[in-house]
Image 1 (spheres, helix red, strand yellow):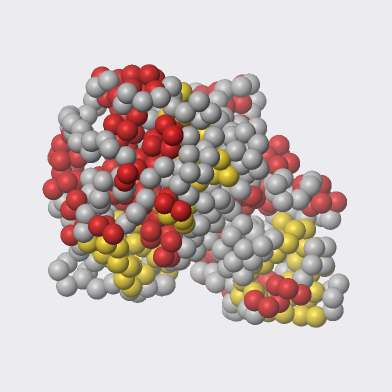
Image 2: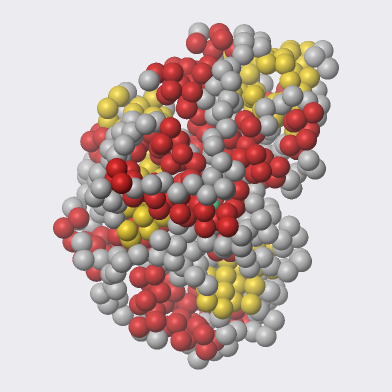
Amino acid sequence: MNLTQKIIKNHLVKGEMVAKAPIEIVMDQTLTQDATGTMAYMQFEAMGVSQVKTELSVSYVDHNTLQSGFMNADDHAYLQSVASKHGVYFSKPGNGICHQVHLERFAKPGKTLIGSDSHTPTSSAMGCIAIGAGGLDVAKAMAGIPYRLTMPEVIEVRLSGKLQHGVSSKDIILEVLRQQTVKGGVGRVYEYTGEGVKSLSVYQRATITNMGAELGATTSIFPSDEITKEFLARQNRVEDWMELGPDADATYDGLVEVNLSELKPMAACPNSPDAIEYIENLEGKKVDQVAIGSCTNSGYEDLMKAAQILDGKTVAPTVSLVISPGSRQVMMKLIENGAMSIFVKAGARILECTCGPCIGMGQSPKSDGVSLRTFNRNFYGRSGTLSAGVYLVSPEVAAASAITGVFTDPTKVDYSDDFAKEVSMVDDSMIIAPSKTPEEVEIVRGPNIKPLPTNDAMSNTIDKKVVIKLEDNITTDHIAPAGAKVLPYRSNIEKLSTFVFENNIEHFDEICKSNGGGIIVAGENYGQGSSREHAALAPMYLGVKAVIAKSFARIHKANLVNFGIIPCEFADKADYDRIDFMDELVIADTYNLENTSTLVVENKTKGFTFNVNTVLSEEDVKILEAGGALNFIRNQQ
Ligand code: MIC
Ligand code: SF4
């Protein structure tokens, strides 16, 4: 067996381990972050379970930390109280980005983890199966309900050779993205093997598993070996270690090969993580902003490499350099060993240990600005400046370019690759254990915590207009934008729904309201990117009943089902071209979904019919019939 199969087998409660077959696995751990967590915990509360049933559940606050107005602070207070009451650890704002802290303090080889954030696979650098999902799926896991997924195909990524000076593990995942594209990973796990693995630290592995999310993959995984052991020892938890890897004769469903010795520094160009270009071809292009941080590249080693390059130098006069360490642990260490003073002397602006600019929480670039970021996503509008061009790069490229003010190839820069890997500064004082007397804990619900919107049961005929027609690779950042203006309303769906598709079409909410809801038509890979269920919940609130697309991203498709919106795929993709905005479509016989996976759709406006396929499990169909998973769960109680 390969490593993925071994861990799945240990957690399998239903189904067969045959690629593409529906399976159910038990989740040992859960994580949530604040932007998706409020919904997840409201849904958990609605399930009426008093204490979480997992081995470990952690609630992080790292996204919405800009407190302009009461909203985010209300959310934090709710999250802290609900965690304390239901047996969940609470990581306070400032303690770090969920994935970074989870990797350092909680991830364990051989375990399963589900998190309400698409970059949850970061923890799979530790040899566990960590999967991103919508908040409701995480709430279900906290309630002890196994997670349903399709058994992934397992692709071997065989690494040979060794990274050269100036080349980073970021370049490894950019190379995989170049080869596989943002939709290459749907239904797959990428399992890293080969000699090259042995030269990569856990932080370097985490950059790769983190950004594996951009492939659309279920997760990416590294073995647990001596390097993992050393990492855990530095975290004072060597007892969590066990050796774990594929069998010598393991088989895989496909092979990707990367020779680390041949890699060169790269960038993902605007506006997609798979629009890859070599830095040598961008050299000399002017840079306005550099941001080092995010859950992809904000570990100790990333920031030390940036410090080595910036040591004794100053940031170019026209560049703004911002640095956000991934965790307080990393921040403390950089203060102690002097790296932080290198940053400040160089002219960097130091931010708190949160997602910050990665989710558009401040630091939007100037109009038409060029921003180099060590992050994982450069989707249109995500930085907060529509006209800006965001390039995703390694910390080495970022630091070198911050000094020169133009794209700079770090392989040509003289700096030392050696730095001390001393014992970490473990301090869990900002992680609050749940209450020992949960019955006494009062849940704090400020005015920003609005009740969950409900949905009606599915009707047999859906007769609605096409309220928007979209191209390929639409992200959840298009559907439910993020940023400082919108994020405070993550627990207030009525308000949040006014921002849906705001960068695609004006007043989408009003179009839906005046047409009594509608149907969304889209191209390939609809809903790629984040796990935010708001991208399903807000359209549900606006009366969207179905999405007809050429194909879907995994997490978003599950979220659509969870909120009672039918995900339909064109049987013949050419039919996409025959539909226009405001066409009236009639989807008939949806009650028949129990017996068929093909529905007939009539385009009343244009006078023709076409077929759509629904790839749904039996339970998905029941959830849709009930009008969403919460109704389904309530009906069962
Ligand atoms: C993201 O990187 O897009 C986010 C913000 O972390 C999201 C979660 C969210 O929208 O709250 C994700 O990756 O799932
Ligand atoms: Fe936060 Fe950005 Fe990571 Fe999402 S991708 S969890 S916003 S740092």
